[in-house]
Length: 271
Image 1 (cartoon, rainbow, N blue to C red):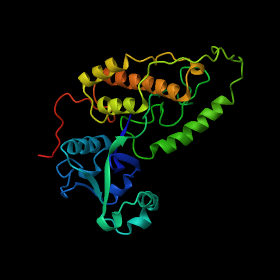
Image 2 (cartoon, rainbow, N blue to C red):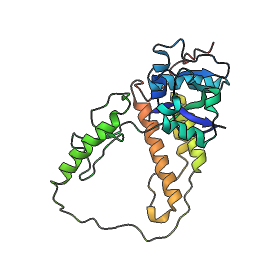
Image 3 (cartoon, rainbow, N blue to C red):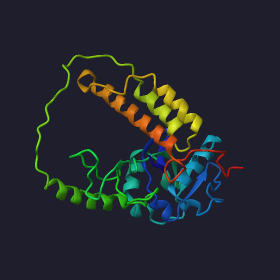
Image 4 (cartoon, helix red, strand yellow):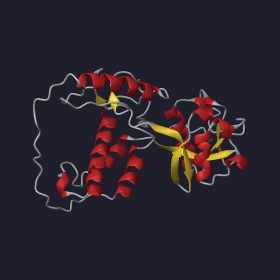
């Protein structure tokens, strides 16, 4: 998972992405006291996403509010009409304060399903395209908008490959009768809270073990779709994804780009 440093945040909830192009145009990250958060970090506000996200979270955990100061950007509303619309829709007085309230948050999956250059996975007839695919194009921390170009190229390659496949088998529906069961699963909110606590911007090996022990109590590994409600099935799938993320983080030999395991205290620059 990749964590994005700047999500619009109001009253503890996030309302969409605030593009990094704004920092590229001169915005800086500050706290409620106008202290420049990234001042002592290499590349400052233009550091890689994972670095900025970690420093922002460290600052936030010390009780600070986080803002994107846009006062150095002329004609902001003309240059960023999409962001402006989102801010206006949520009644953020950014044109007066010149600040956008932000915090780090989960962004996207950044490559996990191994494919070849035709987007074919190891499972016949299953193709993966876009940020879900690990095809060798991206490094540990992809550059912004590379995913769009990759998606266009890989989708074309996948389509060309699919057109050469001759159907040889008809799959039958072998699902069990539609008898409902009531599996033991966490609520969506509880799962999200636990995942953010243990699988978030900064992880620890102790935290990963704690999360997997907590997850082990639930009935999610082999659900039968026809026996679950759509919500239960979604939660079971998310539990499975969370397990895979935690185990992959445990197996990672070192932190690269997205996954960051705290072996010691992260410098927070707040002192």
